[in-house]
Image (cartoon, rainbow, N blue to C red; front, side, top):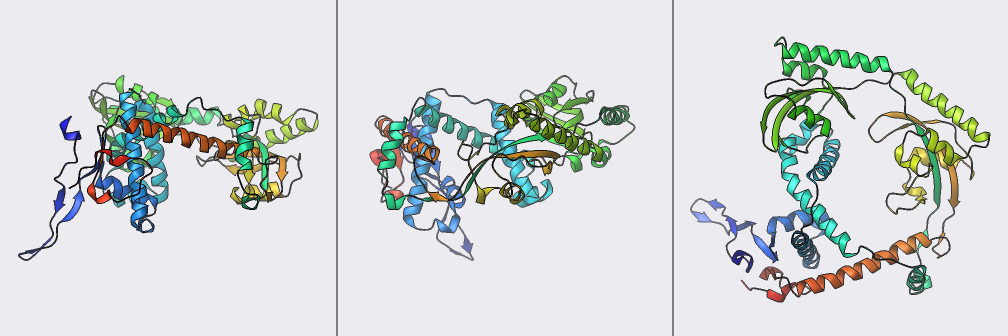
Length: 452
């Protein structure tokens, strides 16, 4: 398309006037780069600079680096569309929800979050949707470039030998450990009590004997809608869990769904409007509560597990049989380091309470049951086994093969991506704004530079 064959000369300008004398026009937004059918906006650059450190990215070379990274992202996005790569809307929505949940936790409440941004949570979700979708396509494209790339022990050895001995880093003390976690089981009578209360609320509202606004503010446990009558404005299909949306699409507009269960608890929905792939709804959410003695039962169960370990049942077998945490259960109780993909954990990066527990144990020892708070805020009990302790040392191939393997693999992937970028730029139109023509680039983005 012709509009993508050159940099658009007209930028959006804001003119600040004082009396009859106008100040110098200030750039608000405009196209500052083109890669294939994708464009880089000035606002994209400003956002990326802010994310990279704001004032710390003040010098021209640093800005050039951020700008080139944007061009690279657009090249990947352009190719992902040419290759017809796809990501499911449900996957995009999960990522959007995860990101917004993180921000809301930082602000302390949905209200403070919305006050700061001047937009509702639903509006922010809608704005983030296309952004996150593009990011996932870029990630998928990048992974496809290096798919199948393998690093052999010989490759790792060669890489290690290129490092000067006096440049090898000092590795801090590391621990490897396993755990068996048991969550309290919510009692059946508590579940029945919540379901009965929800049925009563639902029937009262459906018969017109109550206010959704008042009942939601009194009973609902959904912080995102509790003080808004339980309501969310128009949402894209895929925004909520499948059970919720099944209730929406199986209920007529203006009507209330039966009570249903999700991982969050028990709900009923009032359907306000359904418009193709979008819908508007209100709901009330309540979840069964754990009792103090339920937590005591979890601790006693782990006491029994510790006795079984003393009677020759292996820790791995016990984890598979008794742990309620799926991730570590499937790994025989081993706790993986999410940053490295391995089993070693730097002592300095462990939570203080966990560090204190493990540092007082000898290798092979199993701890007493310890009360812990999970990521979702629920309480549980856990026992730990210290599997290995590696003292601080100068990095070497024998003790730190995993580290050097990851570095070697990363280096090989980067070289593969670099070759791919050069090949694609030979057949992909790219143009940069004249303001960035004096940057030193890793790749020939200026092959079709148009001066302004």
